[in-house]
Length: 246
Image (cartoon, rainbow, N blue to C red):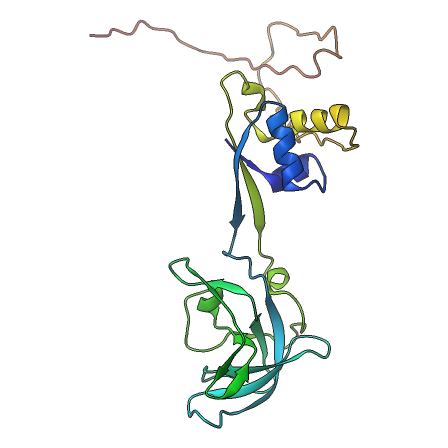
């Protein structure tokens, strides 16, 4: 069974590490067999920052390259060699800084490194949308709106979703945990009662269904502590017939 960490946080707000959650789930019989990172864009655009092209000049040793200076926030200016035909001074762009891992169309990672390109230092890469997984265009670099804030992380700008998914080996006798709420409830009990943490458990919202049929009998809950909620449904006009098989 797959359990979303983000969903667990909605049901049981917390800042526990993946390790604590994994250990606790395993301790209560919900063995964690693995944890996978799920991102709306592979790599999550970590290390990619909004920058502004401060200067753009023709590369002294290459006709189709430009030598740019890009500010990525504060006093940090990077020298970047760019081969895009549409790069120009004043643009707001996306910069993959040194050490950033990007992924090609096949999902293979490549790391941005500081290097000399035709004799000029390049301290990052001004990116096209296909290099970031934001689209398929490679006609030129991706140019952002003028009001984009320099220094903003690309992951924040594009609101990249990231989640940890726990792979739980659920046994047949644990049907009570066969849901996110069931898992969160057991996790909450283990952390609060057995490990001394102080967390809250949010109950899922339950829609009220107004019945159109009068019930032929009345249900009374005599012990509201043992039975927090009882739900039933009345079916009318149900016809039975004998099914001939063979």
